[in-house]
Length: 273
Length: 341
Image (cartoon, rainbow over all chains, first blue to last red; front, side):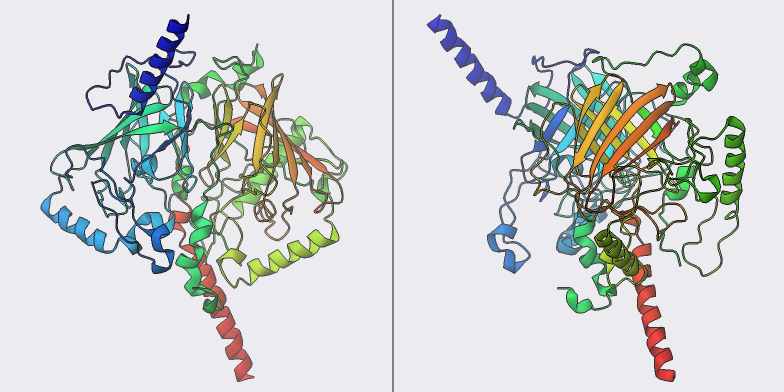
């Protein structure tokens, strides 16, 4: 019995260790079979969050001082090993120049500053949790940042009549992987604070593969012939919030940016800082 | 003067074609519903409230004086009332006046005309006169102060919540119909009921696991909602609201007379399907510091074909800076007039 227990503990530790390892691309036909919904699909419902610095820069980057002197270390940019497969983002020449220009103006021009909806895939790796609510006909995702949200339709949809900040998402299952085709994304969002950007021709295919009870391996293939010379891919694990009573809180930031956006029209602009 | 904001996508809402739920709509024609209707269940065995629902109605929040003493319409009166409401909406069916901000017309409005399915003459059902009870003296003063600030805004935070793209009457409980886009998408899992609110793309995520409310020091725009099933009915209990969010519902043509509440409001809501294409929505409001007595309301939501478009309000809020600039221009003109005297 003792021996049995040790084996079980050993297995559990191994399982945990596996769970914490990002799964390399291509190895996603994982043998893991987790909780199922009543219709037999992997149940992705839960509160999830990326734990990386992709929102600062999708590519590998060293830490650096922040933009607001008064914030000191609090405002500094943390380092990251990057989430782009192969490391390089294949910009067309003119687009690369635009990306560099964006980088120079990143502390004023990043739409995140204005609390605009982040688009896809950025919503996934903002440093905020999001909640997947998996039903049969639709899968709803609610993101804490800016209360943004999207509905993934699990049925064929006609092309969206208009572009939007979060696009139109149509999903299907490939084995245990939820594949989401995202189109009709507006050209106003960025991928990160480093000025990586796209046009209105952006097409994103996301893959959500559960690799353990508490980890989803996420990848997004990004295609935009106006900006990139070929499709490219980002990937990262998403971790489940396992704490008791975990919940999304509110980050309704429109109220936080009123001074920034409209302070100049105050009766007494001196109130602005 | 109107402070409503033109939002880029809004016009497209009206063009919403019945794509997504065409099947559902076909399945749930009134004739079919009248036969045998069994309340549907989710695969987890819970009452199924899922789908797109619209709360626009011709039944006013408060009973108009002309309907004094009358709690329900007869079927004929209901048809007559619908015609009256159609005529009301048509009044605006003309091009906007040149140079006037916010001249919305019937092409923009999406106000309901048909009374609620229960044929009630007001959304407020208690007090029995169908009127929202009187405010306490403190709340009366606070509300007046707020109205004054909206009419003479010094800064963005003085404006109505809709003008700031923070919330509309469809949002935090008690959810009330707005002039347009009164759409919800309900999604259920085993552990949650989520209510996606078109304006402003907020999601009320209601846990069903019996958890307690957040500490009272934590205040949220949508409050803290916990839910449970009582038979066919979803019961949602909401506290922890803010003194900002729940006070000012801009009701149709009642911009300065909307209900008011403060952070002490406690709302209990009940959602129950009456038939294939109707949800009965009931709410109890208790806010002892704002109202002299508790009050209750109810109305029906109707299945809608969708799709729900993304309401990118804040992202396209060109109206707010113009309202503030207008206020500054008015002040300047007034000062100029004074100098000339």
